[in-house]
Image (cartoon, rainbow, N blue to C red):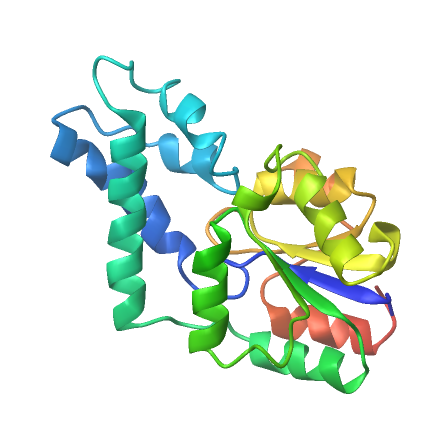
Length: 218
């Protein structure tokens, strides 16, 4: 078993990625522009600082104010997740297992730190995590490895000695670039051959990941 564990949040710990994906698509209606099916995929796992440039690959600055579009999506996710913040299957079990085995844990999310802190507090997970890192804390967002390197530093574990749990392609790329043991837990997208090759393992949910860890396979 590795010495540390770092978790992405949206789509990995909590079932909010489906909200982001729908709202990246539907918010186009508010601005009177064409819906872009691939926008959500491009945004998934990317850092908040990179989002405006990604958005402008789909819409010109004349068509859409990037900051307003992004803020509209974030507000929609906030409102809907406050009604019902669903935890992904197996998450509570794996957090308890790591805690019982004294494995330091961190959250490393592209969402802003205050969002991460709010969700962790609402779910009563403060006892599990010794570091919470949002996309606003680093210069280069995923797929750059910066956020996982910082999270590992904050829990005082070498990135190579950490598991990274992710659901997005950009997150997997970032975990692999940090030289961590990167585990993809499938959420909205199936891994491509490229992504499978970057992963230590791919699972359908955290229950499968935990079982493999207990068997000493990863």
